[in-house]
Length: 276
Length: 288
Image 1 (cartoon, rainbow over the protein chains, first blue to last red):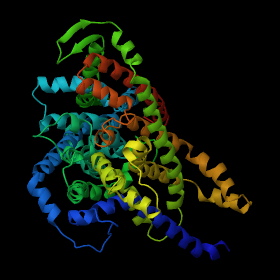
Image 2 (image 1 turned 45 degrees about the vertical axis):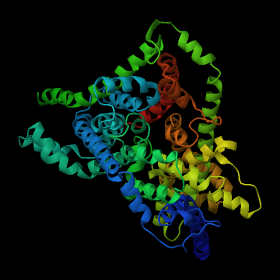
Image 3 (image 1 turned 135 degrees about the horizontal axis):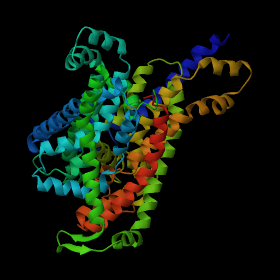
Image 4 (image 1 turned 30 degrees about the vertical axis):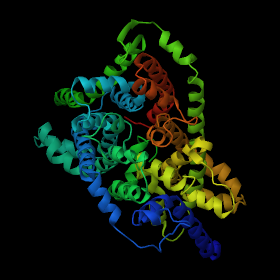
């Protein structure tokens, strides 16, 4: 009975949802389109949407003029490095909390979560000072460490959630067979946890890639990643929309693609398991 | 016996993460506290001795303080209102049967993955520029005078940019929550003749309560410290100086570290009040 109106309702839903989706996505689409225009076409009045002469000159210009590849490399090293470092430190911690829980496990987890909420600006100067003292200002390793630390609570939490789902009986069986703790972790847990580790990796690369407080404040010319590179376009000279668009497209494309793959993990990862 | 062994190794395995986070929390925090009781001007004489609670008092009484609190509240409140209301609407919409649901979801989520500096600059130049921005063209199309968004309507503009970034987050979490709603309950209510808005108010909304709370708390924590969106658009001008941005300026731009650190302590206290509630909600849900 209710099914008779379904197709019409479905059509309306589809139309409405696609319109809203298009509207939300439009700024990104517009940026991508503009990146293929000439600077003159980018500010044409009235604006042109598709019927312009497509060109790759902006991409060439961005690559040549501003040493784009170095910023890209910095982003890759900093985002990737901080994530890998964080995961290596978090795996043993999450493992022990998931499989050998003690009375304090819950408190430790919640305390870790609370360190994530320390406002960065409140500790900006001390970190800045420590960076100068240890010669880490404008170095990739320095940023890697800071980003690892700010994301460590999320990494531990995500891994903990995944590890909790691995049945404990398997571990007991291995123990009966005489497996040592180390063997247990390397040969049994890690393979079973690979999907969980992979999604944790993905989400944290995204978070580190887009981080824009420490990357802007602790880098200058040498170690600046793409966030800082794009910020340098905030004081433009002359015509620059098309080049800004090309640079932006190159900065967001890899993460947009990674992000779409990780949307399921995003929810549990960013809400610390409060919404599943 | 075996348990004893594994317990001590468990502690050992936890140690690196715990020690690092403890250091990350305590060392800078102690330094901030230390500086907040000093007159400390690195470029103008350095450490000029202890001043007690002077910095705390001066930070509160400075003419920039209350406007910055107001700006922070307006931005956080505005973004929360927009993202939660639109997020509920979008979550319900995306939960309906339709063609190409997965693709729409991808379109809606996309802004969340755009780095803050990119979204701020794209909005600033290509949409909000009073001469060449798309919004200016749109305004002219209807015969209106283009708005100088970031100077004349600076706060709404920032709220709009940040809302665009966070709407996907709210939508995604509310959608996840809505999908766990038992559809039979809604059908039963429909059978009993409950109208759509009643079904929404008495079934869907209460079911979403917790997810909404979580969205509000998590977003508040991130929104209290938005930085890049202000840094590359107005640089704190035109009344867009938030508390975080004011502290940033005190510490790094005017290099008044003592004063900035006192402000930092206020910011930390503020964030901890929000964090307290979030930690309690998460803790209830944790069966460790």
